[in-house]
Image (cartoon, rainbow, N blue to C red; front, side):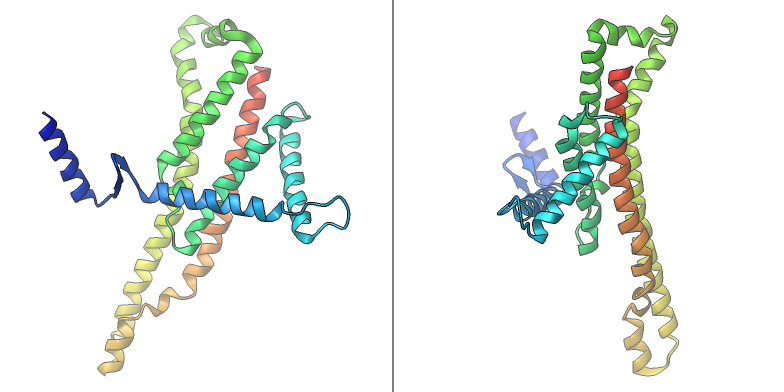
Length: 253
């Protein structure tokens, strides 16, 4: 039995091409996620060095501006300072999502194009929402909420509760992955058009130019402004907004 298991592991490693650290698979998503964390940690260290009370540097001004944005974001979405303790978490969530979304601009595969990334975030948020509901109404009140307005609605209420993390994860994942797929299709289509168009030129010049994806320069860069920059920023904003609003609403429900 052990031989079969080991053989299956060897077969899996060879045919998937995924490197392993012991029995732990080191995927591209995992590697890029660590790169994102290193970038965020480096930025935090860089922006918070040599903080002063007076005559602050431009670097400190940027750091204070980010902190103020995070404070206002949470306060404006919750209507007060009750959830100020969540400001660091929301800021970290937004920063991680933003950099993960935009890192594809440097040729790396975005970790948020892997559903497991958003699923992990959504599970953490779901646990926080559930904890807030239990803290607000107690375990009995939380369980009783599934039977309202009538007992027969219990299965539907449970499904509705579970739908929260699923919808959050799939929304973020779907938008980021769709942008990557559309960009890849545009690049491929323009490369084919470039090959066919310049292939019409007779002689060696046509053969050389047809091998160069000339049409890939220009239009994909313009579309990247939307699919990478705008969509990446908006998805980070939406995910963070839904997180703080769900947690705030949990204490009121």
